[in-house]
Length: 81
Image (cartoon, rainbow, N blue to C red):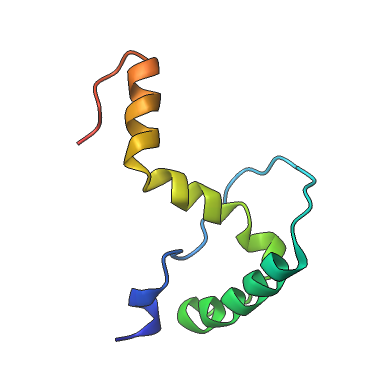
């Protein structure tokens, strides 16, 4: 199995940014640094932990069906298929 099929986070899109400051445990930072290595090998673009951080929660929320149902229900729209 190739690395690309095992990584949950795909290529990083170019998006508008809003600056947030947050702290994280040292172990999480180390894990993010380790994740950046296979991500760079898979997609050919070197990234650091700070670059990965905003994309990971976004990918998590996009795949969270419970969150999606709640959001759509509160906004008066049908649940997406």
